[in-house]
Image 1 (cartoon, rainbow, N blue to C red):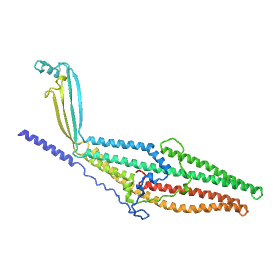
Image 2: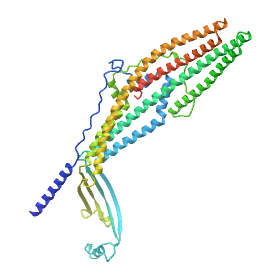
Image 3: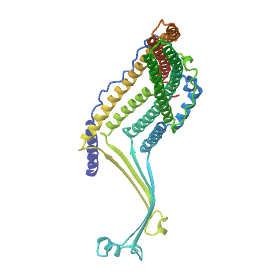
Image 4: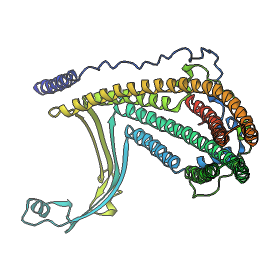
Length: 480
């Protein structure tokens, strides 16, 4: 009876200790939910749900040469391939976490030989003890064993399962990170490609303008011979020709650097970029459907990545809290052991087995666990802010780019009128100069302003293409 009371008393002490330890667990901190509310529409007030982000990039970009460049980059880009390895490692981490809450089973086999001193306790025992009747212990004593060991931590507080779920969310986050990198690569190649087409056209405009300036120079030289112009006029026109010839080399250098930027994104050494810039100025600008702001949460990879990171941080808080609770483990083993191999199969004499259960709980150094728990809460709040920032940034990017598209459209229409007026002004200035009704400086300034206006309209056309690429990326397109 006293023995039963002692057992019950020890059990009661164990339960009270467990309750005391659990009572010391801090309560869950109130971390606020993320604010995912966005305006119902953009600045253009549209509520149409049609969204260009759902268009695949191979369809969005109609230039086959640009599509071929992007295809090559997505296969060879080093940064993207590095990101794919991150995804593979995150997937392996999921398998690691999954295995942690399953039993660990190990098979073992061993052999041992031991010779103990005769004047020791073990030696004395062996001298006076037979293995069986008339059979002494062998000297030296060998030992052979084979069996299975099993260990299993019972996931009572879901610490291990939450760890696996958090690893899955981190894996999904890396996939969205890869998708965001794809959108960036697609956008960067498209931007560089349109920059290249614009530079080709600027170079062509300068060469055309050089022909006009050379003709004007010859005209001024003839006027000088007829005493209707001075050497100053000749030198001014020559200086203008030299200036534009030097500009050609600057643009050629920009072309080389832009080509090599594309080659770097394609993961290859410098070579000529295949392109057709002849119809650049006349290429139509496709209309963009922006949809509604709420679609950003589903379409933009960076927003989805932040969302997965937030969900993972919530699970990490639960994991940190579970560290306050006792861990319950079970260990078991079964095998065969004998001092000679021929006896290993003699059962039950050579059979051995064990079963152990234990409960381990932190008692003294709990400050480190509390600190990690507080850090987990802070990281969760940090993830909330990151998620909200990603949503706000996505909305502002779209709003700014939509405004830019509208302003560039108006700007381009005015540039067209400016170019037409300046082109006509060149012919008029030359005619007036020939009839001595205009100074040579007027011809010079007119040609210079005409060149500037043609360069500017090419830059505006380029900016229109870049804005279309930007809005496509900002809406979340380019990765599917």
